[in-house]
Length: 212
Length: 212
DNA sequence: CGAGAGACTGTATATAAATTCAGCCCCATG
DNA sequence: CATGGGGCTGAATTTATATACAGTCTCTCG
View 1 (cartoon, helix red, strand yellow):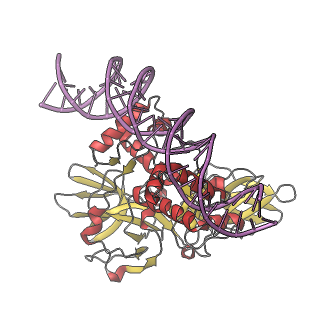
View 2 (cartoon, rainbow over the protein chains, first blue to last red):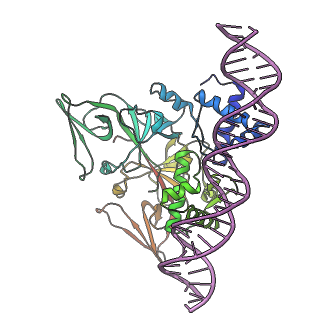
View 3 (cartoon, each protein chain N blue to C red):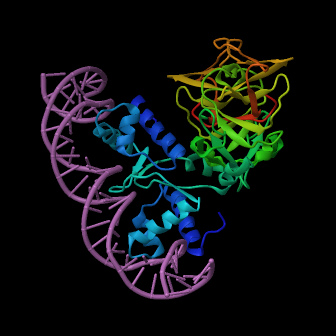
């Protein structure tokens, strides 16, 4: 993504700043006006170039449907390595797809990953109340440290038959029990000899920024 | 701004969330669709009401020209000591002393204050399990927005007789009830005519970085 | 009991904005 | 020396959006 031209970088930077300052992304006309183009199509061309180079996202047909793709996330997409600053936020994860894929991304938060122990690699938005009694509520963001193994008692992000879930981990021999922390929910029992279980990571913290 | 109706609050909250999640404010049609209106004009009416009540800003003629007005400056400028970057972490607060006094400081975390709505001014380490059922556990950090008033149902940081506590706020006339979210604890009832009650701020989020 | 706020439905219209098309100039590259 | 990316102008077209207008129904308030 560093292969942007000087002008493209200027356009991208303008979109970033405008969005931060105004609270909404600019239109083609606003970009053209700010950069001194007499034609809105100059802005359109730049946008296409930026999309092609993976620096910008466009939601077609929507007015102001621009979104700057933060380099931290771009890096995360590459091979799951967190970027320079902050953490990517991941939402509902579709079956079969990698957890940090673009479709699941809800945003990017400026949080020091080192604030958690061990360090967090991403934030996963938790759906449902199955971990309520562990103080993880619907909509909370679980700070996740990527790791392929877990120890008994840890809270894990696990993938069972292509479904991603957050539960407490307990293993005895070849049987893993994924325990909810809410009596209304049933444990998930996985026999490793017959089913596949992938540990995506372990929960290292919680961030709640929705109304209490 | 507290004189919003339930529905208006819902609309405002949707606009806030949509903007945070999508990176751009919603259109009237998107609001209508999300709230279940069959007519876009229902959204328009709500927007007008919110503007009239000072909760929302509209830039006329612009598509998606909505901006939720945060009255963050109210308490922030009063004597808020928040630094340039991140948030101070405050622990046990001694009787009589200001909450942000140096003695109570446990540290400073690199977290974007704007990540919470309204913005957080500091993090308060919560002691005890009295708010367990609200997903606030012993040792959690409560993100606090400094504000001297609270609305019913909000989680507040309150000072009663020089003791600082975190509870859910409910006022009826001259009587304020500070409700725990755990049946093992008793509500604190304050008669404003006889006791002093100071609202230090409202809870706007939770951060947990101790073992889960 | 009339008036106005609140919460909508439904239709219409002007305009904001995205997007396509047709060009022009410069420059590097195989 | 053609080819393609980069960087534009200018105009046209379609679609997305804001906004006005005309109603309905239910409250509350003085």
